[in-house]
Length: 446
Figure 1 (cartoon, rainbow, N blue to C red):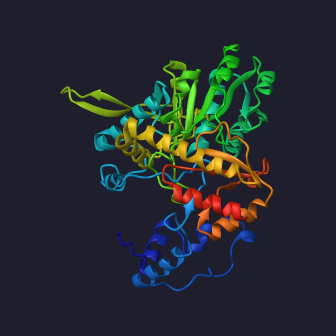
Figure 2 (cartoon, rainbow, N blue to C red):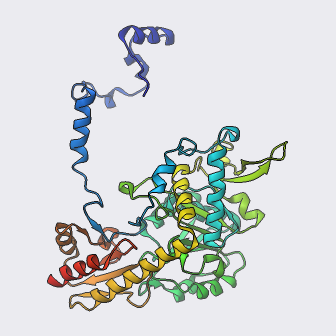
Figure 3 (spheres, rainbow, N blue to C red):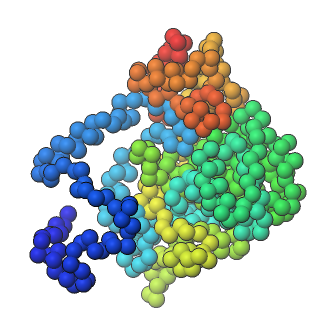
């Protein structure tokens, strides 16, 4: 790391250059009543050795999945990550988190983005993908705005089986744009399709459903497609789990207009909650492509006929049109997208399918065992992918705390969203039978 000095003489020189006598004059525009009128309460400086030891002490207060068995999910999953990923993303050709505007200096990153887009299209069955977004929540919100612009309507029918955090992000984006959000309730652990049908009309911009949904259940996408087809202007936005698409039919089979989702499960670690990446794909329709947020990398040829990669499309964003922009997304999660590209290339179609099938089978084994226990009931025992909703007569917080004492993160307490009660458990291919049986034994002992 470069060292930048800041001596007394240098400070005095800089102050003289900008025409002030003291540093405090720079902050004259700040009202006196909100200024801190004392020195900062910080410790003295440390040597490099002391600082390293101090940071180790702080880091030791964290725990990791090296120590715990995790059944957490809801968009952040403990999947196996091939060792090749860390090796490749450390290469300087790829080690950037920002958008490669200068094509002549960024061929490596641009090619990776191009391959990423191609793989997302193949996974979702859609025609066009952007180069990634910030995360799953922002991808949902951007897609809702995009759908409203295309349909020129402002009514958004959003399933209550969509991730609660995604719903909140979508509203945060959409309410200032005068979008009217109507939440469709649950029928068991699925979207209430009768209520959806009752609310569908010619003023509807988009139907937003998750596949599989927040509770792990698989929606009746064919029925939703039929409902939507009665209204030509209504778009279908599908929020998909990319791992599930390794074995489930792609959203394109159900007439999806836009497909988005959280890409963390594609080779990214949990990172204590981020950074992640959001993916977005749509149909090959000029109207849709021009409204797609973010950017698209494309392949071309130079004057000598050699293949090269460029940013083919950058929509009217903040750095171009500002207040008239279609989106304020000014970058993509390039490093995270690179990770996902390496993961998908390494796993291949067969590998992704195996991850999906193992996650499915192990989740169903665990759900059946838990459902047999006296004080536990799996709400969606007959319909889920690799996450399922458990209700219990025991206090949920107590159950999870007892599991945590046994080094198990036993799922997500749904009470945090103040909607439904119970536990959301997720099972990935990393869990083995011994771990699953141990969880069942501990629950039975309660």
